[in-house]
Amino acid sequence: MANFTDEDDALLEELGVEVEAKKGSSRTPREERIIAGFEEVQRFVEQRGRAPQHGEERDIFERLYAVRLERIRALQECRELVEPLDHQGLLGGTVQASITDPEELDDDALLAELGIEASAPPITELKHVRSSAEKKAAEEIASRERCEDFEKFRPLFEQVQKELDTGLRETRPFEMKAEIEQGRFFIVGGQKAYVASKGEITITDQGRTDARLRVIFDNGTESNMLMRSLQRALNKDEAGRRITDPTAGPLFSDQRIDGDEASGTIYVLRSKSDHPIVAENRVLVHKIGVTNMNVEKRIAGAHLQPTFLMANVEVIATYELYNINRTKLENLIHRIFDPARLDIEIKDRFGNPVVPREWFLVPFSAIDEAVAKIKDGTITAFKYDPSSATLVNRVG
Image (tube, rainbow, N blue to C red):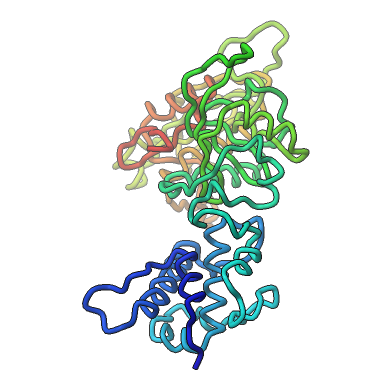
């Protein structure tokens, strides 16, 4: 059975495992450190749904957990100690060849495996630990730290990716500092970056404007960098991009300007169906659609069409569109109110079941507010909350 040396103890301390044993425990301090380290890896797996992995694109904590797990797997004494706790099957993996024999691995060698200078301060201080990509942008990117409230921002990154996949958002080359505003998304160093806040504008000694930002990255880290630092990083990064807001086109207005091309109408309808769900919630059940036809023509014969619930309808509101992509706009509106989408099945004229997808259990006031926020470009900061039947801030 392998015995731990003083170097092993120092290594475990460097990996962030508590040094002192829990009071009243029959285990040695070394065993307590091993168990505590393994439990940290388990918490990572519970949060991410997978084992930690190596790679410079991974954040430093994941890389540390990956090394720690391999060391535990490799040392028989460690395996036997934590095996009763391994409800996730983490000990079943194999040690990767990229890691030196753990029996011979000292502190400096481990740090070298992670690309960290041996003379660096404690590993958990992220501002001293950078991947190769971060080192190249060291002068542009301020120090990053672990984002303690990242779970609040994770849904934003997931939603942005969905909107990129569906075409509601696009990536475009970064062009100017003016594009850096609160609520904007960028891609820098291969990671999505979200400007969560922007401080007061200041004037540098060179007479240039600047501001302190809180930037959240999709790998769970954050930085309080200066606006000009982010600007330089984006300009230097050949793959640096800005992510557009999910607007449907260059202009959405209820007033036509000379030269504008009419492209359709948003319509909000209320059903006259006697279906129990509709009858019980008539003032809340609305169909939201976009058409390039005259709305009256669009709803003609509604009682024969399952998309209109096989019943006549009442026009509640219309909004004219100019120079806009109708399909993208309709997708955007439906995505906003998706939490309140009506789950209802209707039989068509031939008795076949149909599930219409454009009906929502939402008050008209919320629809009207959403359209207004689409017009002024602020809709990206809001989502629909069915519990309060209102639009609420996405972060908060």
